[in-house]
Length: 215
Image (cartoon, rainbow, N blue to C red; front, side, top):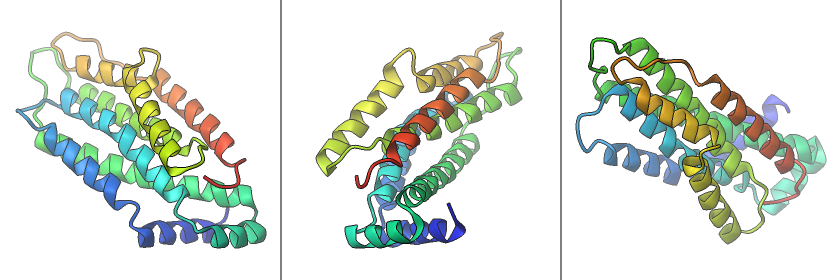
């Protein structure tokens, strides 16, 4: 993967405006979650959850933005796998940027946890790791190599729902821990296992994605 490929896919993603719908969805969901005064744990847990479909959509938009003719030329010049990997890297970078913006918004708009035993620093740290888990898992869902727009939408929707509701999902575990970390007297520990599982999931999906010709 070269800087040239990263610049190429970044420029292509920006010009295609494929990032605009996921950004709009993120803004809508974050604002929709502001139904009442929230503490850091609830706000960051909500942000981590909504980043799953948002980052999945963004990644899907980035990796499918390249026209067939351009993809053939880039694959011949730099290698198909390198080109695909660079597109996924751009999608992940965009997801990390959205995650940082979303987390900053939630921290600025929320209040510290109440209760004599709640640790503000620990709650925020839990939430930030959960946000990272949401970005990684969402990117993995968007990277799944599924052909066709309709099939891609259905797969992304089903994958996002599974990551959010399945008890074995790293996102589900990280979000639940973030929600409960702000309770008075709750023991807080960073969800490292969930983060590791999200990294493994993204690696597996990316490895499968670089082997396909087109989405």
